Every structure is written in structure tokens, then in C-alpha cells.
Length: 109
Image (spheres, rainbow, N blue to C red):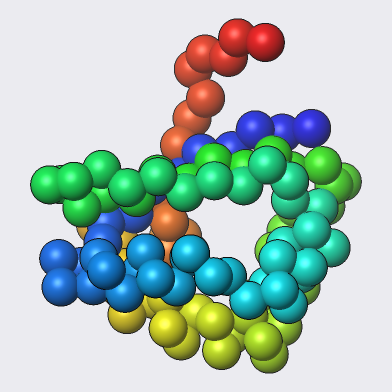
């Protein structure tokens, strides 16, 4: 299992829309995330900075393949068509990232 943290900004005028979307995530999206070997997924919002922090646990063996499967799914592409306009990625993210991945520096069981 691999613990993963990531951050992204949230457009100031889109906070309520993003909260509304995530208060009722489509069942197909939840199922897809599970089929891509992601568990214990949470997103937190820090205001007034409008920063989202995401955390999940990856339980698969081929992260790139699972993320490609997730990205290629038509229902997920539709979901992202609502979510992506709400987000404001960090300029310092790595090439190919939308959410900026973070290095885990501590964990306590």
C-alpha cells in the first residue's frame, strides 16, 4: 500500500460548486476509483487560501496503468468537466501533474 498526498488550488468563485459536487459524488466515479485500486480517499479544503489537500491509499501494483484507466473512462471525463474548471493548479507542479503530488515525510500508525 502506498499513501499519497496532493494539493491544488480552488477558484474563489467555485468553492460552493466544488463542495456541492463532492457532497454527492456520482456512484460511477466512486466505483471507478475503487476499481483503480484507490482506497481511503479524502479531500480537505483550507480557506481562505482556497487550497485543496487530497489523500488516498493506493493498493495496486501499476499506478500509471490504473491512473490511465481512470483518465480514459468516459464517465470520469464527464465528472472532470465539472471539477476541473473549479480547480487552480499550482505553477510549481511537476510536468504532467494536475494536482501537485507531495512527499510523505512522516506517518504514525
